[in-house]
Length: 234
Ligand SMILES: [Zn+2]
Image (cartoon, rainbow, N blue to C red):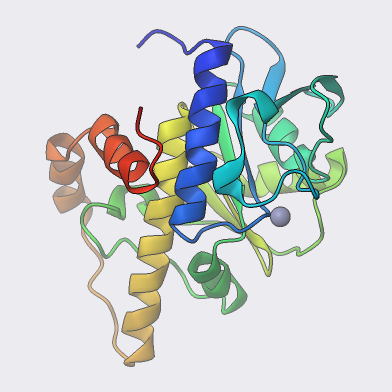
């Protein structure tokens, strides 16, 4: 797949904001980002403010550009205080092209309760096959030291929980990182419901997961569905 241009990424990030919002994973907080291919620059949703409110209203032209040290290099709007979530993960994981941070409720609650998010739903299970690390810190990630701690906790995983705070979902496209956040929430909800009736869930074994990975629909199909649902399919 050819790498996306800056304009395409701006559009994808605005779609991601709307999808996350309509899925109930964000309100006015949370931010998706994308690495501009071949550069050390990051496109990022700006900080929420009286101008940047509900995430389904954020436009492609609102996105700001920061460098890997968190300095704004383009854009009039302020950067999120927690931009170090993004910069530190991009520095630690050169293959990652998109990072999503949300305060999505069910995954956050499972982190608070220190209950694992197990692979128990077939479509979503590959995301958590190797576990979901929990970073035991509820501070705002406002500097490199905290960002590096989070990136270290994330390790090679696609998702991690910031305990008492939210989650990160990372991938090589904005679409995959966004759908990762959605799938994590589905899995968290399913695990929660099984625990709520005092049952032990059946964990999907690796062999069944392999078949799902090979035969499941591609990310394009899922993205089109969620974009349409959010009213941003173009
Ligand atoms: Zn946060």
